[in-house]
Image (cartoon, rainbow, N blue to C red; front, side, top):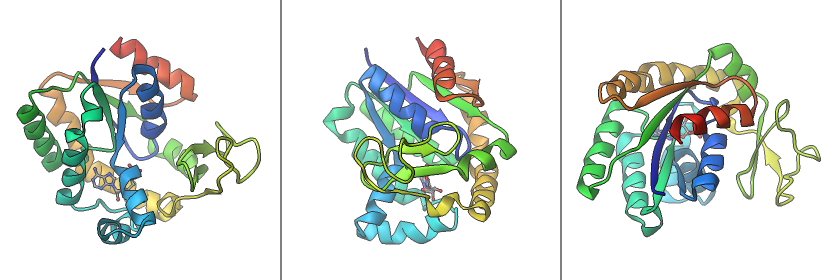
Length: 215
Ligand code: AMP
């Protein structure tokens, strides 16, 4: 079954975790601009070098950079059976470019899911987040700890805390979310496709809320 999804929600709402599970369940591609940018930073590509200072400060990377990433990715044949966008769009301009690109491709989004969560909960969640340097697997010191501290269960890679998960940066990321990304809710509500689910609770609980909504 073809499935094209967008996950919205503040940083730390669990978009990445849920996107991975959904990609597996529906056998579709996960497209995360955050992951693609982090990989570019790691590989020190031209794009990565440009993006790094924005990311470290909790700011958004310029629209033209991320829009370019998404267009490239959607053009790829592996997306023909469906995809899930996680972390894109994050501004009205990104949403408009996306809708133009989809129109040109003669495809449409099936579901937009907004994961709702409060700021205090986010602070607790984000400051406990650890990511594998090698495979990108995510862990959490409370809800999903690795078997061995600091080591990835899947590939034995080293776990690290993202620079942008430090408390001051989270504050900034949340402000940016309020100002730039939250208006997308109204934008998408107008075409009637937006559904909200509660983002508190365990990973499986949230996953069930999403799958109940879309299947
Ligand atoms: P994420 O992992 O989705 O929280 O993204 C980490 C960082 O990458 C963000 O704080 C931004 O600096 C940058 N980023 C990811 N996606 C976008 C986007 N769609 N637009 C602008 N910047 C982005």
